[in-house]
Image 1 (cartoon, helix red, strand yellow):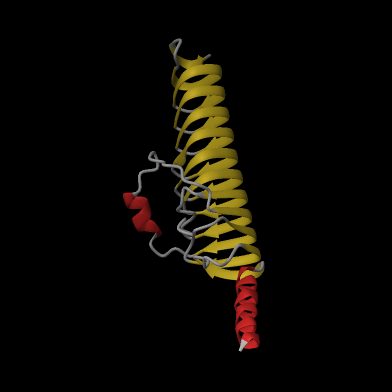
Image 2 (cartoon, helix red, strand yellow):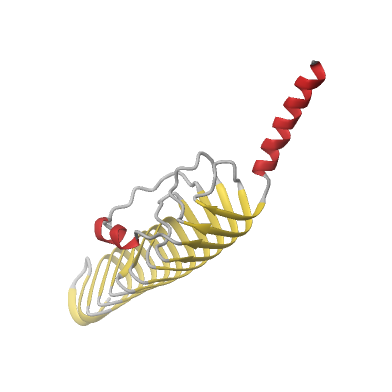
Length: 212
């Protein structure tokens, strides 16, 4: 009887270990038992409801079918950053994009939109990014929105609360800018840099064409 009980305990133990071993492929949303994937993840996406930190090293493909609805009803200026639940390193390709403000992505992301906690590297977005911390080169059809940004942002409208680097768009906004804004309308609070556009305003002055 003792041998049977011990055997059952060992079986359960090794089953749990097996469930949490590093995988080379997984569907998304990933199961709670999945800790790390070194390879490829494909599915509907990640929603930040996993109980512990998960990692992806490799390729992540999101096939979110309701992406247009998310774009219609989600405000990119509203961001409530959450505890990090997913770290993705590598290439992200999405018909939608990351939709959880508990996600950190490092690498290249090509998607319709990106909502995440931190985005480091290069991203190309059909619509926009809405990120807590945006670092690197980011190109978006509508614009790039973040609390902090360091690098280059290209879009119709760029609104980065704290910006270090270059904003290029029709409308560029920041509360604190260290760098350059190039656009039609440029607005910044504290400025250490240069504004080039039809109308430029900052905490010191408002001028056409060039401001500093």
